[in-house]
Amino acid sequence: MPQEAPPENRVLIVDPDPLFGRILRTKLEKLGYGVEITTTASAAMERMRADVYRIVITEIDLPDSDGPDLTRRVRELDRPHYTYLFVCSARKDKDALMRVLEAGADDYIQKPLDSLEFRLRLKNAERMLSLDDEVHFGGGTDRETGLLNRNAFLQFFRAIVSECRRAKTQGILLFVEIVNYGDIYRNNGFEAAQRVQLTLAKRLSAALRTSDIFARVGDGEFCLLLQDHTPEQCCSIAGIVLGRMGKEGVAYEDVLLDADVRISLTSFPQLEASAEDILNYGERTVCPVPAFASSGAKAR
Image 1 (cartoon, rainbow, N blue to C red):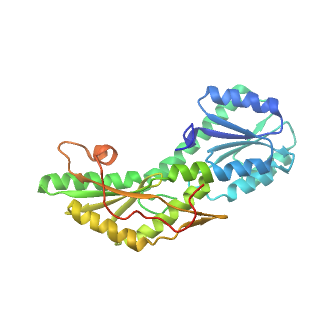
Image 2: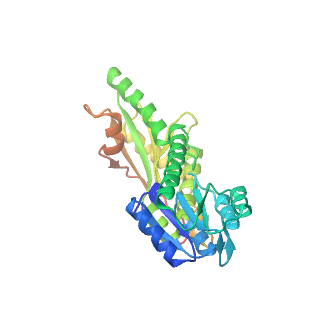
């Protein structure tokens, strides 16, 4: 991933007061968070479209907007994970509190900041985000693509590896990876990378059988489970899949993005290696098939 901190540990502060921003940043960084600070709603939305922040802390009074309006705009963003949103202010009136909560804020922080109270409120945010992640990863479906998620795929794969060991048969994991996913993310932003990933997922799904066990197993990475197939057969399948996917680029704003796709495979079972080890560390062989490329401009 192109971030220094994982998404669950990234916070965006939106406050025109530089002193408050620095104080809050220092407290959060001591707790292990990666922090960015903006001073306006427009700058905040630009950062939100380009990157992933699980927690946003915004002042209610901003130079170009207000807390309730920014809250509504954040809630309108299409994100696979929940964003926990604090609104902070020195105001005492209940009307301000009600307006931000009605707009979709999760909590309200009174200025000046009470360190102990803030830490407790942050713990509540962490618990809620943790529950959201449990639903996301434990529910079986990847929210971003509608495919199986990694955890659900691994449950199927464990059972199939055990079955292959008993029956002394072999199978193949076929990986489809967007090699330049990180470059697209860094150069064009989070939403662009997600658009490419979702488009590829739809094209792959359309090219496969409904009975195939197919999952998103990482950022820009998919896996197809094929039982009773040889590597040679799988490379042929890879070529057919790529041909049916087409070669169109992915349009995002004024850029036509190319997905540089690599298809590789690993066989199973592998000696005494667990299903997790095969999925995570199994040695992969790149399939000698034509690379998927669009005719449009390269991602910046």
